[in-house]
Length: 278
Image 1: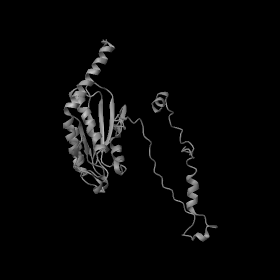
Image 2: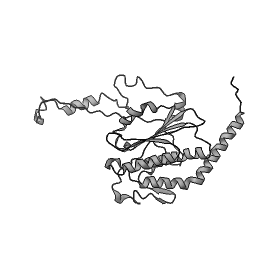
Image 3: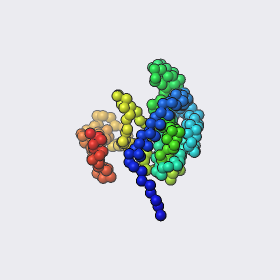
Image 4: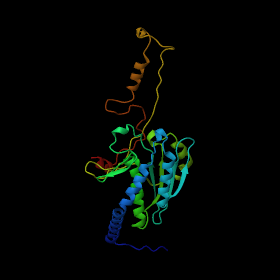
């Protein structure tokens, strides 16, 4: 026989408010420590396009995860930098949140346009100035800070967390499929959070509810066995024009895809989603 103890709604809401306040106060007390952690991560170069500092950055990310209580694994693809996979178990939650980030950054050139050295992580007037602070190392550290605050001030994280942090996002994640092939059985969860988040012009946090996908296609058109002079345009079809006509059949003037069946599996917006968009 199972006995359930009912908790009054007012008390439950009060407990949530108290926990949120304690977490916020903990963050305020410890923000300097996490800013320093962000500076350490940003001072480590990790330019994937130049293979600069990648292993060292991966080791630093893995260390930060371990310090926050994660069990970690470092996956090394055939070519490319390590991908860090971390898991954190909740004592009071049953659901799982999947989180994705990347530790690589874009090249810093032209360096002479920087007001501060790109890997100095200088702090001035409440702002930090390194490559990668907002894309994507700041997001890594802010999530570490939120998790740490939930553990220290809130008692525990509210759900299990699986965290994937790769090092080739800025160059198209060419070896990420290897990681997925090996870990796909361990990447299930009820929800997922993608890499970024930021503030709008009024400093309000932004929540991105979805992103478009990407599809790379290469077309080759050949209308002759060898190069032909433009004087023969009347009798030898120019493949460029055939390609233009073909491309014109893919999308109409309003941007709607004309390929048959393209929208068959697209779910319509719910009334709630439409309300958010409006």
